[in-house]
Image 1 (cartoon, one colour):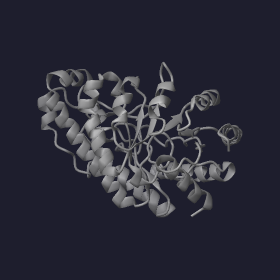
Image 2: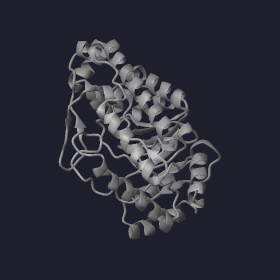
Image 3: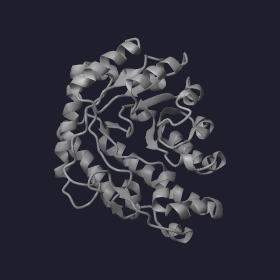
Image 4: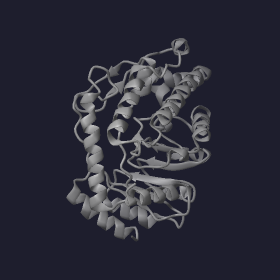
Amino acid sequence: MDARIARNRRLLTDLFAGLFPGHAIIMGPPVPDAPHPGDLACPGTPLIDWLDRGLREYGLQLQYLEALDDHSVPSARIHTGTQVFAAAFGCPVHIYEDSPPAAMPLVSTAEEADALQVPSLDAEPLQRCLQYATMLRDRLGPEVPVRVPDIQSPFDIAALIWRKEAFYLALLDDPAAVQRLVGKCQRLLEGFLRAFMAELGECNLCHCPNAWAPSDLGCWLSEDEAGAMSVAMFEDFCVPTLTSLSESFGGIFIHCCATADHQYGSFRKIPNLRGLNRVFQAPGPRPAIEVFSGQTVLLIAWMSEAQIAELLEMALPDTRYLFDMSGLDLETAQAVHERLRKACGG
């Protein structure tokens, strides 16, 4: 293994679950264009058409690490939209020309939701992801980590399957039916992740933002419906499944782009919440820094250098950051990385 990759693995492992090694900076390359509308999980295009994109992106990651000496761990990526697990249940998928595909609702009532069965891992979207992952491994070698597709939380998958306006009424009118569908989504998600880990061996369970962690530190997922419900509802419908997943996989990392500062106390109840990626709204990042410092790494993405400087000023003695500045061209990335490295004390 390349010495820098081994060093970065140790640093990120310590960042998430050890003695503080300093803030991490990851400078991934821009993602190559997709060969077709939709994504590789959508039927209708040969998987081989997508392989060059994955191989080229991995090569660019190696190039960036060589040029920048940042904290990245190059991984072969599986780019998908949020629709994968909902589509496995049978949701139709709308394919856009210039943005990721989206699941369309499948059911509108509790009776229809109860009639759904937990899909087999042979469902086409899941099989295509697993097959593509093995294609990447076979071309790049077993030592290269392969990343999972987009992972939504069990509640968020259920919210894609069940027509949204009826789904939120059901939280009040038939909460048990919602819980049953969320439970089915959790079983599918757990089964897929275990199959992915068993098949790939060396894998990266991170899906958003761009990062790496050992798979035994936990799974990664998006919990983006958190802003649409009260604290009590979030603790009834979401916290139990997030807790269960954390206990099953040894920890959990969460992306949340909702207006969900009011859920911070509930997020703190999840055991081994190792990383949290927020898209901050008013009042900004300070509440997250105050709540999660000393417990959870704040995964920072899609922010400017000026905003990162403010974050560093706000940091408490036990705040831990991972800064994901992916998507810049190499020349710009070199300059930005050098300034950030100095700002972080490197």
